[in-house]
Amino acid sequence: MVEHKGNVLMHKYEMGKLLGQGTFAKVYHARNTKTSESVAIKVIDKDKVMKVGLIDQIKREISVMKLVRHPNIVQLYEVMATKTKIYFVLEHVKGGELFNKVQRGRLKEDAARKYFQQLICAVDFCHSRGVYHRDLKPENLLLDENSNLKVSDFGLSALAECQRQDGLLHTTCGTPAYVAPEVINRKGYDGAKADIWSCGVILFVLLAGYLPFHDKNLMDMYKKIGKAEFKCPCWFSTDARRLLLRILDPNPSTRISMEKIMENPWFRKGLDAKLLRYNLQSKNAPQVDKNADSDSLSINITAESKQQEEKKPTNMNAFDIISLSTGLDLSGLFEESDNKREYKFTSTNTSSTIVSKIEDVAKNLRLKLTKKDGGLLKMEASKPGRKGVMGIDAEIFEVSPNFHLVEIKKTNGDTLEYQKVLNREMRPALKDIVWAWQGL
Image (cartoon, one colour):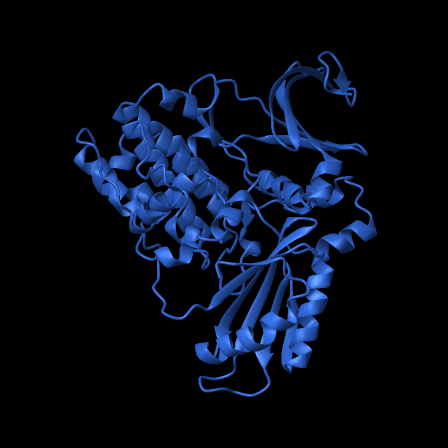
């Protein structure tokens, strides 16, 4: 067991005190017995992550951290595994979270700029490697003994290859106060642009000592984010204010790019030239094989469990559940529609039972059905209607193994025809698997 101080892991790391813990992992201080180097070891319970279908996310985190070797990113030294545990051996960052420094009050402009420069250089490097962090906030920014910033926690990060055919990411994740409007909107987003927005919120917090978008009512906060309703305090310099207005632009297509941020005069003031040189040299260097370590990692997933994971519907995080719950549909904050195109229901049946039932309904309605990854079922009418061929998507989200949320929405065709089919044909036919319809 590694939970007790003094044990030696893999004949190499002497385990020390517990530094922190979460639902699936604990982080310990440890010492390399050969080099005496201090490290942090993240111990992940394999059974727990397998039960909730997070093995692929763990593999992706390994792949990502092997890709992003940068002075301002917490480094992953090695990964080990036993039958029950996975061990991440990480750089030990001793200075704590940047969040703790901000809690004591706002920073002076020069100090805030230094951290922002290091953050932008680290995130820009990630983007050059096709990695999008998606959960940037002061709690995930650590400080070393020299007060240099280190980006951590790539558990929600995404690789460019995770984008769909439209070139966008579609997983709603992150921390609400720091998340970009287009992420809340759930219509697909550019991972780089979303990270830039989060960097802007962090800069505001460093300079102001409080959040730009804050409200006790979550929906009101989302409205403020969607419209970028914020005010810069009087002590912000004109140049800092101008840069923030370009970063916190609610329209991702006109939001400032990383390249333009790094050319900005306010940003470049006092910038460590070594950082820019490192980014430039590293971008031109050959990339490592991002699959090598994660694929060779002995996680011991059986063929059967791999097959089950491939068939599993999309796992929902807390952000998804909030945004999909009754009365909390966020799309209305950003667009107006007289005719509802999206319906949701919950079910206590298994995902395979739900899929089977939807297949039967599609067959009876003579709809062509195609299965996609992540529990997405696409249906199309056999003949064109008033406004082309009607298309319907049914997407299954797993809240827990025995509780699912199903979202049905029109993707093409006439809205009235769709509503007629849904209300007169589909809803009655689905009644055996529906626990409750949402928002009706």
